Amino acid sequence: MSYTATAIPIVVAVLTLVYASYRDVISREIPEVVWVPAYTVSVGYLLLSGFPNVTPVKVVLALLPPLTYLLLFLLNTIGGADLLAAILISLTHLDKPLIPLATFVLSSLAPLPLILANVILNLTKYSGIFKELKCVQGSRRALYVVGKPIRVSDFVKKNFVFLHTIPTDGGLICSSRAEADVDFEGQRRIILEAIKRGYLREYDYVVYSPAIPHVVLLTLSYVTVLAVYQLVENLLPLLP
Image (cartoon, rainbow, N blue to C red; front, top):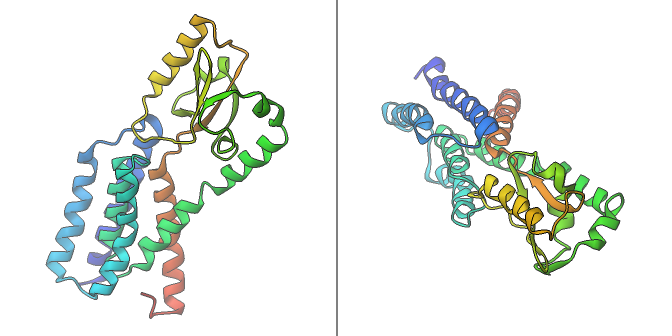
């Protein structure tokens, strides 16, 4: 097929991911129907073109990222949209597995600066606050990596955040987990109820982390990899 025909699935995938990223940012909810056109185009192209330059080894390599995402999805650490985005990228590039693999690696490394910032700030600026946290369940140590302290009065004003220290009348339930199906409003209600019952005050601290829209990270990583791959491909035509 012509270069134009080859580019169509990629363009449709990028446009779909950009729109999905927008939905992810504003609501953290992406309807499944959003993915239908891009999947239709990608599968249709593969069928019409006869799977050009696609080998079993390339298919296995291209499917490694979505298989990893499937495991994370089953563990409830990512949402279904993240999995669908990863599958779309791999499906679009079954003939060039380096693209989905590089996208996966880059998007996975993207949160590292935030994690490093958390560790540094929690060991220095917020060390006193962490020492005063009373975890009656769970470990306080993992919280140094996943989040940072915030006053209760500020937490209740935030949207799309994970609460890692759940208040009880005996102390805090501390957890480093960030589950994909978390009820953000439910977290807020827990805090407000704790204030009402008197075992949490507005000037007390809880530990939180932002719910990072991972589809956005995938999209940015994918576009970056496409640009770099195209540049390198001109120098190294034998890239997988």
